[in-house]
Amino acid sequence: MSTTTEPGAEAEADGRQFVTFRIGAELFGVKLAEVQEIIRMPDLVQVPLAPAGLEGIANLRGAVLPVTSLRRVFGAAEAAHDDSTRVVVVRLKDRPAGFVVDRMASVVTADPDAIDDAASIGGTVRSELLRGVIKRADGMIQLLEPARLVGEMPASRGAAGPARMAASAPKDAATEAPQDDIQLVSFEAAGEEYAFPIGQVQEIVQLPAAITQVPQAPPAVLGVVTLRERLLPLISLRRLFGLPAGELGESCRIVVVAPGGAQAAVGLVVDRVREVLRVPRGLVDAVPPLLDDGATGRLEGVCRLEDGRRLTVILSAARLFGDAALRAAIDATTEEAAMEEGGVRSAAAEADEQFVVFRLAGEEYGVPTEAVQEIVRVPEELTRIPRTPDFIEGVVNLRGTVLPVVDQRRRFGLPELPRNDRQRIMVLQIAGRRTGLVVDQVSEVLKLPRAAIEPAPELSEQQARLIRRVANIEAQQRMVLLLDPANLLDAGELDALAAA
Image (cartoon, rainbow, N blue to C red):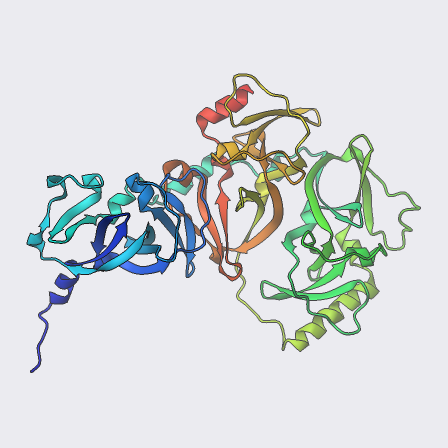
């Protein structure tokens, strides 16, 4: 005997079925039709200035998933996550949202007339968060309204939002820079400090665990790596300059430079990247003849810092890799590696964006490179200004200019961190005023395809204004929160900063 389902009967049944779960001793449920999936607790990225209920955001197969603790939303005591902890993922309009529950229960079916109005009972949670209550002989199931659980989060902005922001965005740092200043990216090899003009640096990336070795390559050539669908030859600065050999440690970085002309990019392996400098041209001297024999002219000058106590040798990417013999060896290395791999894979060209990436409390943040004027060390002492907000650390004298300094941990409500050698001050132009932000560590300059960048989930008005986008780098299991420099401080904070 066969049966047929009337049109709409299946949808009606879904509307009467509820996925139930427990928070403490209480039983809650949401409509089965609203549940996208149920997953174990994922790795989370913490988001500053988000609602207290948010545990963080996660990568859900390429999508950014905000994860909210129902215990926090309900005001219940915190509980450690265990093997029973699950995240119930629901679909809210065009985006997913996850809710942390203590453990799953079952799927139940309830007729509409068995569901009481939430306002008619004294529920465990506020009645506006409930769509109803199922009373059963073995207890009560409180039915949640997922959209109301995140009701305090602002709706998605329309197209007019970014257009309004464009008018208040800071001017390009290059146009704001004094004409007699130059910007440098400095780095170290064997204890010596070198630098490239910032315009010659394409990006700075971490050294991968594996480097493809190429037989019969010159000593300075470490090998090749794949960087975004292209082969990048790696040159050791130590070997190139005949410096003492050293281990390739965790602090080593690849400074990717474009020598210019038809020459492809080259990765220069250095011991560590120090900082981004903005220095007056008057502090740059010509290269002494004894320092550079003039045959290759690999050096552009020597920069005198800290009253001459610190000397930084400025390199020329074009001349450094312009030597015919070295260039031929680099090209031969790349070609041989390409043949080994069956050729470099071609990919459709897509616009990239470049960010300076820094860390705060273990999370990664990025700001557009054009917004960063320079990166300097945190001085031993800052001048405190009385009667200023707590997040203003003080002011420093930066080459004759008073620079207000903001402690970004305090600004984001993060735990305090004792001063250490890794901390840096990132100098940005915010609302026409140069401002320094103290961060835990500046890690790299990162170039990202736009396909890896998506709008950030809007969890609070303050967070949505500050963190507009997220870089979701699936291959590295990594998320970078991208800050909008124009909104790092609100109007009241800018007034306080101006008074500092």
